Image 1 (cartoon, rainbow, N blue to C red):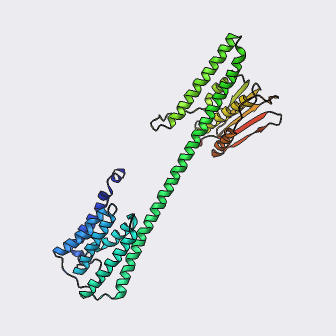
Image 2 (cartoon, rainbow, N blue to C red; image 1 turned 120 degrees about the vertical axis):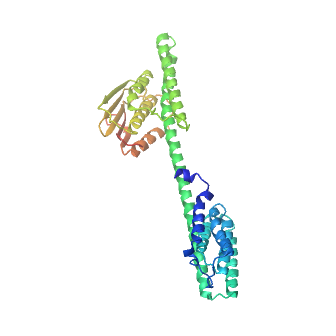
Image 3 (spheres, rainbow, N blue to C red; image 1 turned 180 degrees about the horizontal axis):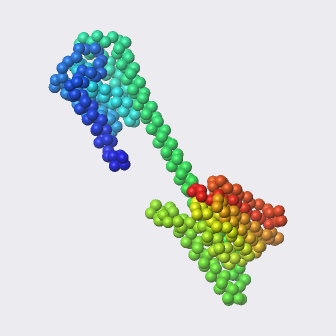
Length: 377
């Protein structure tokens, strides 16, 4: 099927034209086609062959050259009816007419006017050579052609609506992908840069202690390397040639995330229970981002306060709770936009889970998430 669609529309329409051509020359079907004017039947001759060829072969160009196709088919139809051949090829006229209505982009009204005028000329010519068709018959046939044109116009409209729908779907998909990448960038940059800022600020007070200073600067460098690696991965997603292997952060990397936060000066208690499900879908990544965002906020707004991270796996979901004690005195830190928590809520909602973030009953700040496992998106 895909190979067939790779051919030009002329090649794909050619079999229809050849089918009409061959069928019209079957002796048993002679004089059994469309009859307009009620003229007596006439045996096939050379002029009948010309009429059949004009009516059939142009159908191969009905989509590429709709006006040319309709003009040639109409000419062949006129020869067919005036000669009294009444070939089966006359059926090609409504097909050419519907194709023109469906695929013609410009001068549609002009085409309709010219066709109507040509039909009047044909009707007068048939009447002059002895047609017994009454006015009612000619009008009925014209109305049938009008309905055929209307059908082609409807096809054109539905095709345009489908193209518009696909365009909107493509735009919505692109917007959703941009939003997803923006969230990933927010999570990666905010967490790593916050850790680096905290570590760099702590280094100012360690100038008299070379060993702690060296450890702090090493932590800053390690954090920067991780930020660069994550950013390269996200930018690689924008490249259509990037690998398809799974390289997204997972719950299994939470220990590394906690260690990084500890080196930034935040006391973190980490507990992980249960066995991860065989297929977690996107739940793994969302759980990782929940912990990452919560630890980033702890570094920014409650630096030095005790923080606990609890992750529980079950067969159907992942439960995450990050609790940070009240810092007492608010530390200086860059103001947040609130986009991180809002983005987490959207991610968890998409998977059908629950998310909450706010003041705990005993003080401090608590982030909780219940994330169903196994959802692919």
